[in-house]
Image (spheres, helix red, strand yellow):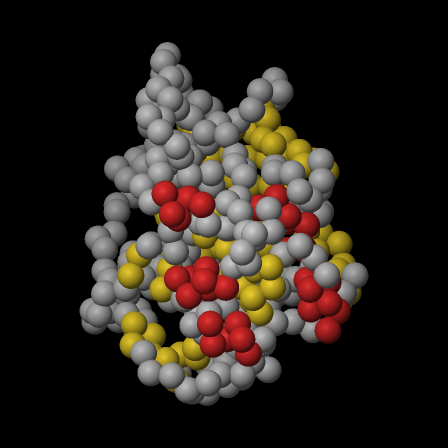
Length: 357
């Protein structure tokens, strides 16, 4: 699990304080955390080849279910998935933990977007800023097998819906969770964009019968290359928020920009990155808990764009029920394989994302 080194970084230095806001109790604590700095990768052009490797090398041992990478910590591999609702308001950037999450879902909410960051193979101390949940999280996260759900709380109807679901409720508004989860308020940001916690402490709140999550995607073999049309990245609009992903061949990762600016990660000091970008075109309907809140319909099927290894494949996403993972298939009905590593899923409205050739 990544631990923050005490270093001077201009982007953020998180200092625990004893203030409260947004309806959450905030006991006074004393703790100082600051991100370390990593060198930023430079953007390069996408590779021109789309041919797949002719051989497949199976992993020598077990892999983490949410990344397809070899297990390096057997204890971590057995713990449950943890989903943290992370703020994406301009005042919340740079966030802590986005580059540590195995899978990140970007959801449209009332004002632009919010993230559901899924942690399993690694964690983040701290993680945040943490914000409220939505009814769309209940269907979206059911396939992770009763994940820990870390959120700041919500209105009465949303709270009741989440409490009645199989998500393990770790709301900051519950005092026992606040103390045990390492929640704190960062006094250099205004409420409600200043609530953080520690995944190392939150995992100690898992119920005794919690289990590791099942695999969500299918992955390429260790020596295989992604197959598809060459694409240097993806560009999209998430209800007024410009989102861009640019393929960096040197690092083998996609680099994220938001609103025309590099989207920074507070822990590394570098840019937010991922190995795969999956665009799921979904329908948004008014939430039954609050008609002002959009609710992504993630059961059924729709168009998908899958970006991996500098290529893009246009296909279909299918999901039979809330307990089943998404299945990605190409035009011939074959499963689309991802590069082992971290994955971002954009829950986008139809026609709002396009590949950059």
